[in-house]
Length: 160
Image (cartoon, rainbow, N blue to C red; front, side, top):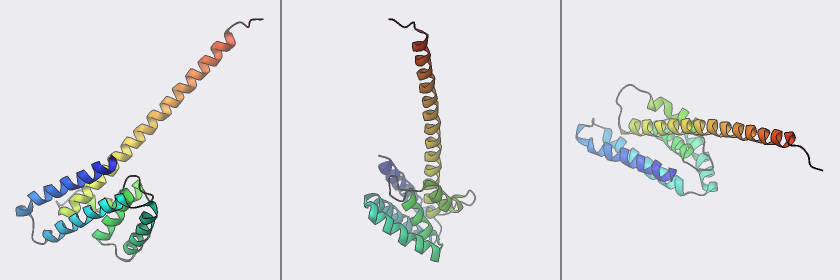
C-alpha cells in the first residue's frame, strides 16, 4: 500500500510538471524525461526481488561514487527509499536528497521530484518515531497493569 502511494505521488508530481510545460524554462524537457525515467525506475525497483535489489544497489552505489550527478543521486535515493526493499535506508536516502530538496530557487522537475520524495521520507520518519513513542507508552502501561495485578494477588488472603 505504501509502495502504491509512493508511485501515485510521483505520478501526480509528473502530471504537475506536464501542466507547467508552457511555463518551463528551456532545457527542462530533458529534466522532464529524466523524471519520467526515474518514476519508471522506482516502479521497477518495487517489483524486483531482494537479490535483484542488492545487485542494483551495488551498481548504483558504484555509479554514484564515480559520478555524483543528479540522476545517479536520485536513482540511488529512490532505491534506498523504496518501502519494503531489501536495501531500504531512509536516513541515507534523505541524506542523498537533502541537497537537491533544499529550499531556494524553484528548480526544475528533477528538484521537484527530489523535494517530494524527501518530504515523504521525512514525514514517514516522523510517523515512525511517533509510532515508536506510542508503543513505548503502551508497553509501560502494560507493565503498570501487570504490577497492579501481581500486587492484587499478593494482598488477597490465601485459602487453606
